[in-house]
Amino acid sequence: MQKNKINYKQIGLIPGYLLVSMWCLFTFFVIGWIMLASLSTTSNIFKNDLFADGIHPENYVKALITHNVAKYFLNSIIYTVTSCIGIIVVAAPAAYVLARFPFRLNGVIQKVFIAALGIPVIMIIMPLFGLITSLNLTNSRIVLIILYIGINVPFTLFFLITFFKTIPFSFEEAASIDGCTPIQTFWKVILPLTQPGIITVTIFNFITVWNEYFMALIFANKSDLRPVAVGLFSMIQSMRYTGDWAGMFAAVVIVFLPTFVIYILLSEKIIANVTGGAIKG
Image (cartoon, rainbow, N blue to C red; front, side, top):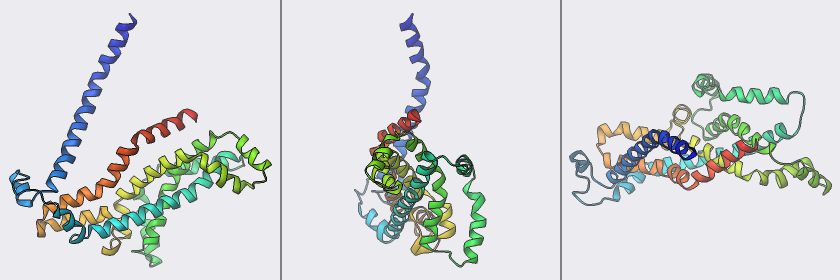
């Protein structure tokens, strides 16, 4: 009877496995076709005969230099790396205080940050734009980085609080006996212990900031300041005049490759850290 029950359960999972398999096959087909098209020519793409004229790796050079993808790529690296560091610098100490030190408004502050997670970014774009325009700070790298930090702090804070709560208080007691101040205890003892959570949430923030489009379009639409998402959109718009579709597909590969590689290489670690923190919490 037990074997029959197990078989029934496994049979019930087959439709789900089929749907996931079909979605994976479709995704890999689309990504594979884009990669192949990026090494072909525009005429061969429209003829659906991708390699009739051989392989053309110069499409990537053209995308990086002619279409300014190298500049957009560098801008995205600056925005993403700086924002991810700033998010951790702001959110980690705040999460530590909220998780480890009880005080009167602790619960209220946590609820405020949780409520902030439910506010769509598009609802605050216009007030932010009005404020930044009145201060004459549009088209500024620093302003966009500050906005990225502020918008992603609530999620990071909520995520790290769970990890801080799993650390035994004995570590802080031992550090106090050794003469560490609370600040030293946090940076030298507690923060290294939460490294799995910090790495996981940083990966999420990296993907979010790297793929962000709307805020960059509003606050950094100047050509020299555009990240890859806005730059790629401008390239697509220019295709109606240039017709260089092979170069555009090469640019698409350059844009999505970093997040794709990061997720493929670290997906198991992300899942393990998320589920581990949830179980401990």
